[in-house]
Length: 268
Length: 328
Image 1 (cartoon, one colour):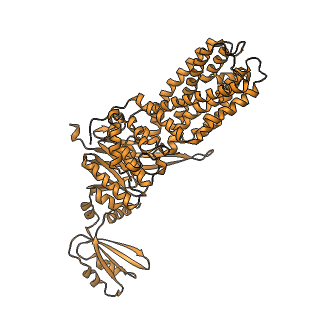
Image 2 (image 1 turned 120 degrees about the horizontal axis):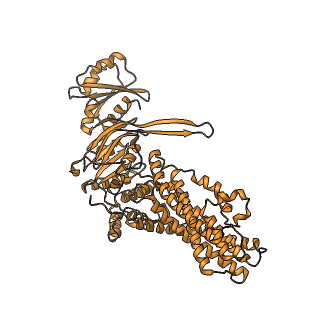
Image 3 (image 1 turned 90 degrees about the horizontal axis):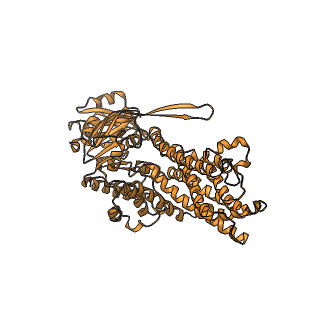
């Protein structure tokens, strides 16, 4: 039986993790709630909430509801998938496989990005129906591109969260506590500049804060967000996302080493 | 050169677990799971590691399969260090921890194998053929496309083994592969394990089923309280505990004089006593053929209820003797 060992491929492992995520999603009806039903509810709530926000209220509504639904799918889902690995007992065989676990996480994050975008699309369609027409977006192409990039910023935080799930079985507890603070603090629902000033430096530690502010600058004429404007936001988003992804790679290496020292991979 | 190295070579291996409990007043506990293990396992056979619950079997298996770091000492597998050369080793080793967990229950058995085939880099051109072969080999053809959550425990165990050998490892670690299985499923797993050895795979098997170890493993080590207390062939281990014959005498109590007389019989190396319902059972390990059941009966004429029977010393006897000596 023994032969020259097969060479794993990081790309193939990422695709395999993506594929397994899709299969698990399709096999589990509970996912319909956050991915299909929640965006509809968010869209309706957001539409009512921003009715008085002026001529661009539809854009506010779409951004608010879209980000609410995508937050859960992209960021929360990425970490939670690793928590599931702990629960299923699949974390040990996956870590024991030759592929670095980071590439498995990346596959899952890709799926979560895609499902988050589907959530965003549902929000758009619902608001289109209830408003009786499309919102006014000054730069549709730029909006779409930036929208996808914001998914990447969310995913970069998700990868770091996933590392915490590898590190400890209590990561879910910590993530649940931080969920609403993160969601408000990064400006998912409304601009961060509306929050007390002392919260801003904390918000700026997270890539989605920069990305979302940039998106509002791009799509809402007269928007007053951070004083450095659209390009400053964009630069900040790219820099913090890069930092998070680099940090995630480093954290994964250290976390893997730590759990091998602690021997707690099978705990859940 | 490397092919001449042992499959496993362990020197002075220890593993200490430190944990803390409590929230405000943290209480630290320290557990020595492995206390100085030295062990060499040759290639191409099944090596059995026996031990009671908590002896350190799973800890040792996890260290050897690169899932846990040792506290001190070195462990080499296939001539490579499990700590420093884990990347080299992982594609060459398989691990089956077994049990109900460790599989993606919502997808099919075949999809589980596809996923791990991709993580192990099984060539794409071979993947489907190899999965089909393995599914057939573990007799899961009829259930391969069903969700794993519909599988029985025995079926899950077979799937675990299929996953463990999917990438054709040189060495396979099996941690209690038949625990909790019905006799038929357990027998099928043992048959499968034997067939893997025929393929040239070295197997490191942990179990606490004596008959399983006796049936499968030419060589056995007994682990107790984190130490290897014996390591040899089953036949040699029988001699180690005082003989390959066992005589059991059962009556409503024996006095010290009778026990001493039995101890003086030729070839009797050890006497153990245990209560057995209302009766007392004396177990005599007998090294030679000199002492027969009649000799025992002759020394105990005052016990009309006495029953004496002879049997071969089992691996279970060996195990219990050695583990009890360690006070487990």
